[in-house]
Image (cartoon, rainbow, N blue to C red; front, side):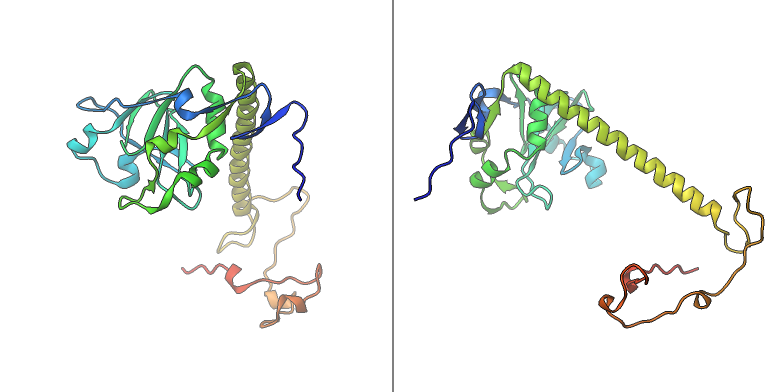
Length: 265
């Protein structure tokens, strides 16, 4: 007989997992309001949701505009509202949920589940949804197979029956603040990496001779001797058809044919 593990002090077992005793567990239907406002004749930017990216302009994504009747059925989102794209993908097999952050308003397909969080910290829920917290629950609720339109077989009723952990609002804000800070640092680091890659590319072009030139554009002041051109075979012995295990680690260079890039002029 397997002995059940005791919950840590101050925690309890819930539908949403092991949570602090002062956290509540609520269904999405309790903390969110389903959005039903149609675009109708009003003009909104039509957007879709792309996994790993978020909201994207639909015309740019699919290369075509909607017909009038299709557009009229679209659901209106305002900044801070959420939408769940039931389309599955390799990165988001249970679909994905994003918050509208970079637009004041937009219209999304009516097949999406769109909702607004009530009296809670939306930053917290954005982080919760982006973490994939609902994936296990969605997986258990999705009927097998995909519909003819490529969307997952999941009803609105089943979607809004999913449960989420609800900390006190002050704690929600603190959690969101820390995670949002991490996101900003990651974004800045990624921007720095892009800039360093661009800088390195410039150095590579300037610090090695261009085709038809014998010297690079940039040299260190302590070096002035002319560069020589030699054949690779003068400096290395080339062996082909050998497995990597035949080479001595740390002393011999092993290059796969697939890694070679041939440039044709």
